[in-house]
Each structure stands twice: as C-alpha cells, then as structure tokens.
Image (cartoon, rainbow, N blue to C red; front, side, top):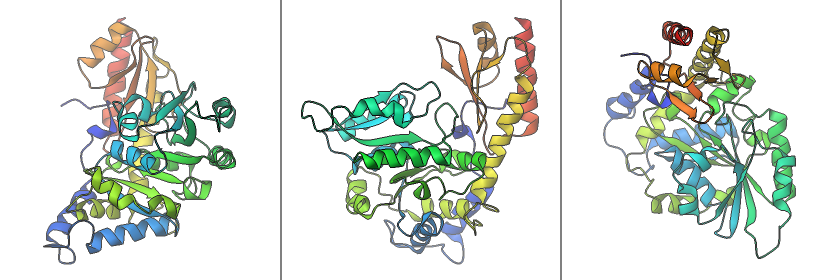
Length: 356
C-alpha cells in the first residue's frame, strides 16, 4: 500500500497506546472487570493527570469524537440566542456537517481570515450589536490550535484574544485537535497555551496523535463543568467502558513530568509528524509547478499544483484537494510517517510535475 498523506486520522494506533489498551483489559493492575461509566481507577487517574498538567481547575471529561468534543464544549458556553465567533475556515464551520448549529441552536458568525487566525481587530466589528435584542449575541470566541490551515497562534496572540473576549463578556474556546503539534512547534508546554493563556474550555485531541479513539473536553472554569456530566449523557457520549479511553490518554501523557512534554508520547508523536511535514515541504519547494501556499509550522503542507498533476498523483496516493477553485492540495503527516515515505512521495510529486 502506498503511503497516505490524506490525514493524520489515517494513521494506526501507536504501539504504546495499544499496549495500554491491552493492559487495561488484561493487565495485573487494571485488567479485568471494573466499574463502568468512568467510576474506575484508570479514568480517575487520567482526570487527575489533566489537573497536574493543565492546572488544578482543569476538569476533563472523555468523549468519543472530536466533533462531539467541540459541540459539547460549546453547548455549556452558549444559549440559542448566542453566537460563536470563529474563522470562516474553522473546522466547526466547514467540516462538522452543521453539527454546531443543529445541536447548539445558536449561530456561527464566521470571520474572514486569510491565515485562519482571529485577532481582536477582526472580531471587533462583530460586537457592535451587543445588547441589541434583534441580533444574536456573541458569547464565545472559538479558535483552533493549530488552525485548519496549519498556522499557529503565538502565546501572546492567545493571551490577547482571551483578554479581548473576557473584557467584552465573552468566553474563549480552543479546538485542540492538533494541540500537541502546536505545542511542539511553539516549543511550549500544554498549559502554556491553554489555561495559562486564558482559555476557558478546550477540546483536547487524541485520535490524530496516536490514539485509537477518544477526545477530552477540558473546562478551566468550575461553573462550565457543573452540569457537563448530564449534558454528555444526553448527547450519547458517555462511554460505559470509559477506562479504555482513559488508558490511552494516560499513555499519551505519561512521562510529562515538568509540563514541557519532554519524554512524553504526545510530544514524541507530534514532533515526528511535524518533522516529516517540514521534510516534505523542503523536498518539494523547488519543484517546478509546485507552489507552497502556507508556511509549514505543524504537520500540514499546502501546495498549489496543476489540475492534471493533482489527478495523476491522486491515482497513486491518498490526499485531499483543499480548494478546487485554486487547485490547492493538503498533505498531512502523522506520527507513523517515515522519512522513506516522504522521500518516495516527494519523488512522485517531482515526476508528475515535470511531466506537465
């Protein structure tokens, strides 16, 4: 099978995560029967681990899916007359099939941003009708770290957005589907760009960074977490055998003793994915007919190619066309991507591009 550059979701399960699942099932410490619905020791240990890494106020709840993590996090931050401010390219706007609008009952207000990032200046025009009963009331600013375009918010940019939101009575949500990749790229710890930067609620991604399944919703304000257990159950995201989600997160977070992630699987996986994306970008940057459209900061490479070249490459490799109008494609790498796979794909890009 040819290497896949379609999505980091295509990658399998990291061996250490698979071992953690096996130990949760059969191991001497946690294997065998255990209390259901999160009352088990593994789930309690994983929730405590989030507190150790993200701060004492961090309350983590496990769900199955990234869409559920985003929608349920936002659900406790909004009411139907509210609005969520997000980039037009945000995953919650483009790739969740209208799930936020359907289940929140409130409006997404989409902000045009060429790099996928929000700023106070871009948000300010959306606040002119605060208090006007004829208009949806902005309540949450939702950002993705990293963004759908692979770009990054600096720590100062997150702090600035948090301050702006809080000064205007809004909350800040972070879609952290690729949180580990962002932390590696910025050279910071997970707390630095979440609770430490003023984020109120976080969707913490696991599946894209080596887990079989499972995401975490993390609240940093106690009032937001107050009724979440009931909301999660109503939304059909309460896992009866929750220890198998928790075991994976424990494996992912294990070894992060000082908050920087040094020695932790989450950082190791993300670093590999990021490095392979940089290598791919370096190898195709000088190919005639290939134009990189974004700086490569994490594990995504965006490039513009001729339509015929795209078609021939897609006959050989799996990847997505990001923008059919501009012929921009997206190539994703993962923890499982190897140097040999990148070199083989880059050689194919060169071959097909030179063929015209």
